[in-house]
Amino acid sequence: MFNSLLAVNNNVISYVLIGVMVAILIVSMVLMNRRSKKRQQEAQDLIDAVKPGNKVKTIGGICGIVVEVDPEDDTFVLETGTETSGKCYIKFVRQAIYESDAVVEKDGKAEKITEKEVKDEEPVAEETATETAEKDADKE
Image (cartoon, rainbow, N blue to C red; front, side):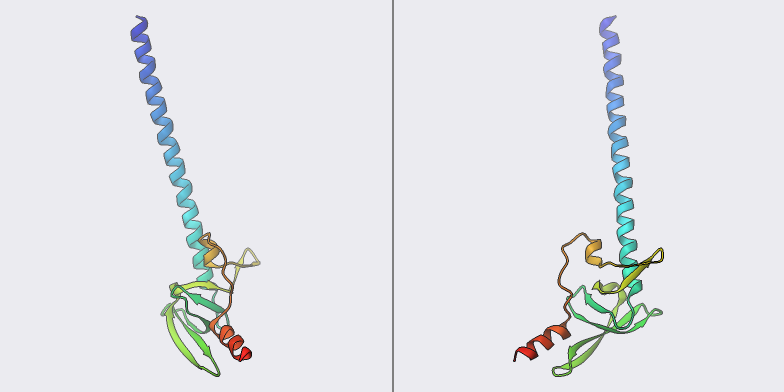
């Protein structure tokens, strides 16, 4: 009788452990999903906050100043280069924005975030190609 009671207790303990493990797995998946959605929303807020005059770095590494934003086509025009080397205008899809000095307003407060911060990476100096070329021209 004692052996059969012990076998029943072992089965119950096994089911409880499996249930706890499944519950932990479900809770961790829900928390990861919420964090992911929050990061995506912050990245979208950054993209939506970009306006003409903002400095932008694209996912391809091109730095410049936004000249025009077209919400219908979901694109923007980026000005790169300098007066001495010649300016260039390139049209990008707004999803190509990697980093920007745009200010995102949340709950009436202005917040400056970069998509890089959203991705939990180290911040990089916010120097555009124009500023770099101007510094090089000053050195010469």
